Image 1: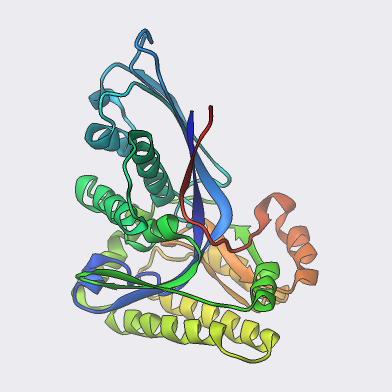
Image 2 (image 1 turned 30 degrees about the vertical axis):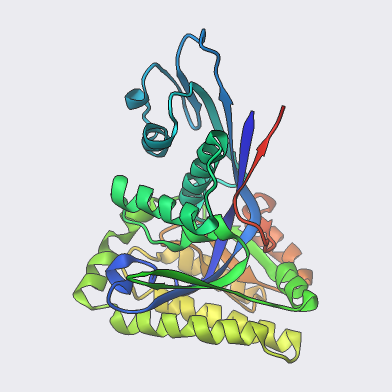
Length: 331
């Protein structure tokens, strides 16, 4: 049996500039990190005597004889191209649900491609894995998605990624252990109570971007990734850096709300205001918008108040991680 473990991500600054409709003509960048929540995929080659060649378990279970019968689009198209003639039993699970702004769809794509290639004995670089996942989602499946999620999932860690029409570059951030621990102790997610399709949420935003209506907002969001990265790495008092970074998240969120009408709604706005009233230094809605998780930076001694206000099931502490997608063979 083979198992892939691929991290979800928290995007801090620059989200929206990672779409081809923008960075083909303007530089784009995001600042973010993978987190200690994961998508897991396991695959077991089936014996030739198996009744069905493919068994796929996710929200539903599929048992089919041919690859074209597989309904899950990423699995179907990946197995078509890189699965060879293997008969497979595939199952997936995740620490947190999809459609919540944590890049789970792309984490699945990266994890499944990594799994297939490892089973075949292929040697892919992290860059090749990210590029192949982007190609799968944008070109083969024609999904309206950006490129940061695939890169986060493949590389892992706290980094600033820059995008141009020619590709992407990576700037890993170097923080002191003390500063990293302070950030990790401060971060928590609060669930808005709703999930959404990023591709659908982005329809209006992409239209505005192509028309140039979002140009000023996106340029400012791009510039903030440079300022934010420099801030996190600079010398100085850690609490002061944390406060300034939280305020940048807040400003970035206010800019992102201008990108399209589906980015936020009254319920999300009310939740964010409530978090600030509880003492959060700053925060933002993660992902394309419309639902999912709000990230707050709040002192650890305030976290119980968040649990009391929003409920224990809806408040999730997170920490940043260093590694990207990995594959393990068992047995």
